[in-house]
Image (cartoon, rainbow, N blue to C red; front, side, top):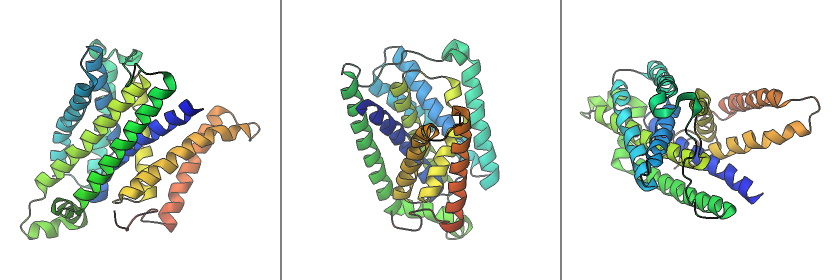
Length: 293
């Protein structure tokens, strides 16, 4: 039971890292990124492939973050010319391009067969202790990233990012060039996505292209919107509540006669969609939206 709860907590914390990265991009700067899963996959495959070559895991994690940030640079440059819906379409297309590339380049990624046997963090520990140690490590990292996000949001750089999100034209009229700031924050968010992907790869120890579908991006968006964009507490609370609901609803089918696993999955998505509609109607800023970090 402890191992199961730790596993759920680890996945929730990985999604929390994704939500914190998206909160930097959209919550502060209003950059609409529908390609979260692309950088998540890049981080997972970069760290996984390097670890299979015997590279130390610490180096694998750094490489995953760096590659994700570097590949985010051209998308960040596109954000200078594209707005809202168009940027969303481009990032969504980029995520599918990454997934298809991973699937087709079998010489490197083994395609649909996936990468098995990835080394685990704390591999030398016994089963419950390893999961607990990984959970504790992720708690510390998420807390550190959340604290850093709050400090960044309250800094002059963070106030500039909020100004870009509120009224970019007015900021430009004051003599500030928002271009490089948007690129920087896009790359920083992508680095967090890459780190989350590396943690996911070495927790699951087996990754395939089918694990990195757009649904992951929309789960992250759901958690952020329900919790409140622009708020660290909202990003964390919304993500954790969404994960608790998604996982807890797996047991509801045992209490509803005649509902199969497939049917329960459809009901789960419908319930999440309904919750998102209700939050949008009655709490348009989310549970913590509009409040201090």
